Image (cartoon, rainbow, N blue to C red; front, side, top):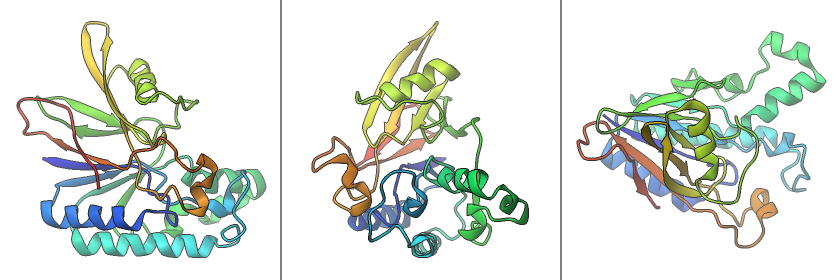
Length: 238
């Protein structure tokens, strides 16, 4: 089984060329499964940080653009199982409702319903248990967004090794927008942690907080459970 693991897209601040490459890869390679690591939608309108004037009042457009991505995804992969892990940007919705209008959750004012994930047959994953993906050599990796353990270090791979330390398993996360595959000795086992990059546009209004030249890497990853030589993913750069 081949599983594509796709990091932060941040719609409506996605890199259009990177998304075109991703969808073309899905169409051509036909992976057996897809796992989105979260921050697929930016939810910029509900940020507690300073918001860009052009986007602070456009939550409906953010939702519409994200649904448009799902439409394109299902055109190239109509039956592929898809998991969508909640990231800290998706959690902006829940936190705002809980802070301001907690009663609204009781009547279904939740993000996954507005994104119509059931319609697109996408499984929305919340909580801190991770999503298991089969890797090569009979191993597996646990996928998280990356915000579940606080703190984002600037050294590529360091955030992933925090998860390896915590869970004692191979780990794949997004969140940092950096890209690294790091071996890690955990007791008698040699494990690995992966930070999977991003597919956003660093020059877009929602990403300008990072400065003109952030040390981010555009990438996604592929695990092949039939690989007898290595459990590590193949990293694909658009």
